Length: 388
Image (cartoon, rainbow, N blue to C red; front, top):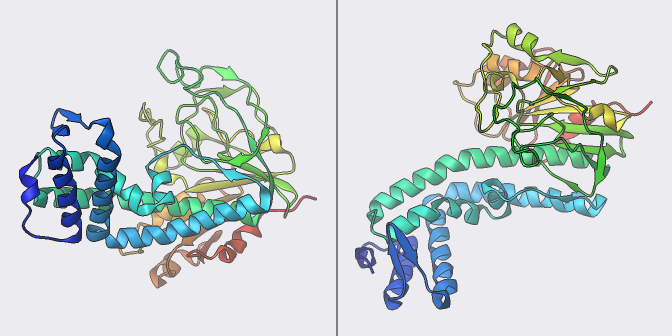
């Protein structure tokens, strides 16, 4: 097959790679070139077994800290999922993505990131030393975001669990899968008006929401046995395509243009593919929470013009706090939406003295060292009002 079979320096990962290369040489029907890959069906299963072993071996050797830290998160994330399922019968349902693979099995999830580079190595497009440098850089760069997103999900699910959910709900807003013209520029955003969909009960919990959607609806909505109210959570804000015909007058609304003006944000169009509010992203929290005695009061988080005022906002600090941390920006993210019942900074690690100095005395902001201790989230749960 290749000159890469003659690796001189041996390490666990290189040994596993040589086994893969030798298997390919022993099966001349396999052809791996830069523009074509042929793997006969009778050897495909064994090929990918060796291929996956080599990828996993690379992660363990070159990114051991990522693998170890990711494993701890994975175990905690799976544990809270199992608790929710056993206690409520509600399962977690998310579309397959790099994040779901990572949370299921961190080594496998990280190894999937070097699928294409490994084939390039087999096709002699890289030298082994170059591959090792490129692949380790790619994994470590991706790990930071995967871990941050994963820890945020653990925090959100742990809060949901502490609320003792009895039912889960969906607000079926139309998205670009159902309407292929949505977001394609055939009409100006906000021009179309429509009714916000009502709640539908479902038997799972999911963070998934298409980025191009008529109305921004909560990602998760449950009925809480602890408070006997409905609680909704939202994250990863996108821009709504439509304007609601009617907004609930019992709820408090924030005019999006006023919010931009207050913080000196120039009104620009968001990224047309992701629909992320890039201009608002610097002042939005990681999570917003809302509650009501009526589930349909929580149906609309935002339309094109207005955003629902949250009761609670949360920003998660999953890594080390350092001198470069912009505390003023953090305050904006916590307080810009004027949460009515408080703002929280959730720390995975010990709260550093610099954070206490910068934020500890700010009215409305509370700092929590949570790590993986669900009990530490009770300070947040206590802010949700019980039903009258």
